[in-house]
Image (cartoon, rainbow, N blue to C red; front, side, top):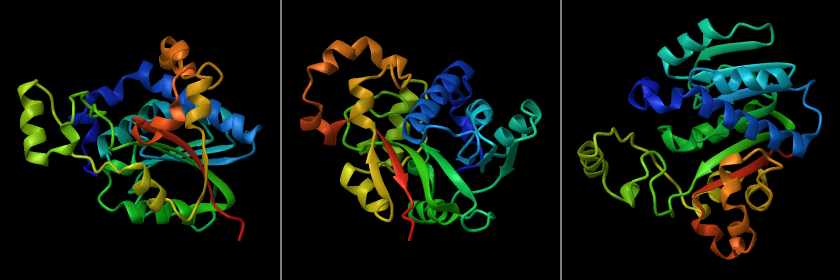
Length: 242
């Protein structure tokens, strides 16, 4: 992952949008875990810390890491609470000890790292046995590219994608999206609990407010039949006890 992502893609710094994502994440985690106040949590790819700071209200200890030095500097200067810390660090090579965290957040991060296997191995390593990872993962087999919303942009070579994006006055940040099958293989060491369909069926429960306007449509949509084409997956990944 490049160290200036927040400068290349400034929409990631939109506070209102980030707080909405934070509300979604904690709703899913609490639905799965129940009480979280005694747990430690790591946010991988925390950017400027808006989501991390919000989640810190619900955990005993919250740590955010990112390779984006400017974003981490902003996070450190903006958010200062006793149970919150930020480090400039790669998710592909963390300095934390084995079995450190109860929960890891990996939201829309896997596609932007250089070595996806290293990222997953590190998440697995730093999680305690029985610990979980909240995963938000974009799907390659979707019509609209997730960053810019340009149809099929992510299927083109990087140079072509960047050129097309520039014609729209935008910057395309190269991403390595995987299909559903690819994601399952990438996270094969974990026990996967799929939260995607429950969220689609009851978005209000999980604070996915942006989906509410599609609620009636989704209720009658055979989501299970088109699952491999959904733009985004929300999974809870559990590290086995043994």
